[in-house]
Length: 164
Image 1 (tube, one colour):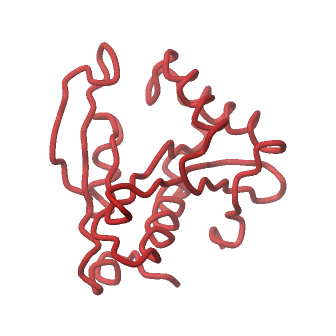
Image 2: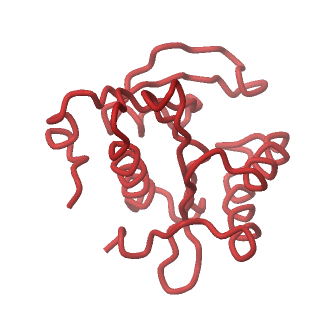
C-alpha cells in the first residue's frame, strides 16, 4: 500500500535522495537552474514535506505549504524518480498531500505551479488551469498556475481523493 510507505522528510537522512529524484527529472520536468532553489527549499521547509520510501529507497517526494491564513495549500516540489513515472506513485503521493492539507480547518483550495509537461496529470486529479505564463520557468518551460476547489466536503470523495 502506497500510504504505508509515506513518511515525513528528514533532512539528515533524505536530502541526498531527494536531490537524486530532482536530478533524474532534469531537463524534461525541471530545469538545471532550479536545483539551487530546490536545495534551498529542502534546507528551510515552509510546511510538511513527505517521502515515499518502500523497502528503504526513496522513490518520490512532495509537500505543501499553507498560504492565505490557511485558506490555501500550495503543493510544492512533487516528484517521482524518472525511471518510475506512470506507475501511480505520483498520483498516490499527490492524493496523500491533498488529503493531509484538507485536514486544516478553513482550507478552501489547493494550488500549484507546474509546467505544460505535467498539467494533464494534475487535470486528472481535478485541478484547473487559472493562468499560463509562457517560458515562466525558463526557456521552453511554461508555468501553469492550477487550482483545486476543496471547500465542498464531498469534492474529494467524488474525485477519489478521500482518505482510504
